[in-house]
Image (tube, rainbow over all chains, first blue to last red; front, top):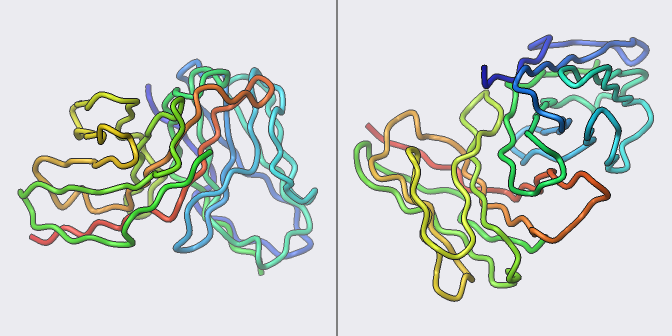
Length: 115
Length: 116
C-alpha cells in the first residue's frame, strides 16, 4: 500500500466553525507533513512531524493546529479561519524524516473553502 | 536551499520526447536535484533525483550538466497523462532541521501541455 489518503475531499466552513482534516498512511513512514497550496501556486510547507513529534512549524497561525496521534495518522484542526485560508491542503509522508532524500508521498488533498 | 529557474510553460506532442530544463547556477556541492510533478487535481508525485551522474528510472531520465549548474528532465515518450506541473527542487544533503529535514521547497515549476 503506497497510498496517502485524506478526508474529506472537499470542505466548506464558516469563519466560526471548528473542523478537522485527516490524513492516513500505512507505509510505515515516520515523517508526515502538511502543505498548503493556493490556486495556481506551488505547495508551501506548514508543519512537519517526525516520529510523532512536531519538528517544524513554518510560522503558521494558531488557528491551524496539527496533531499526530500515532505514526499512521495526521490531523489538522481548524478554528476561526479566514476566507484567505481557502486552499488545497496536502498531506505527505516519507520513510524517515532525518534523511533529506527520502521520496515524499502525497495525498490528493482536501479542498477547503472558508465562507 | 539554493534556487532553481524553470520556464513557466512548455508544449509537447504526444509520443514525442520532452526535455524540461532547470537552471540552478548557485547549486552547492552537497545539493541533490529532485523532480516532482503534479497532475491536475492531484498531489505532487516524486519523479527522480540525482547528484552528479545521469539517472534513469521507469518514469524519466535526469541529465545533469558537468558543472551541475543546470539539469534536464527527459520524458522519452510523452503521453497525455504526462500533462502536469513539473517542479525542480534542490535538497542540501548536509542541512539538519533538528532531526527532520524532509520538507520540500517548491518553486513555480513548468506547466507541461501535451497535444494529441
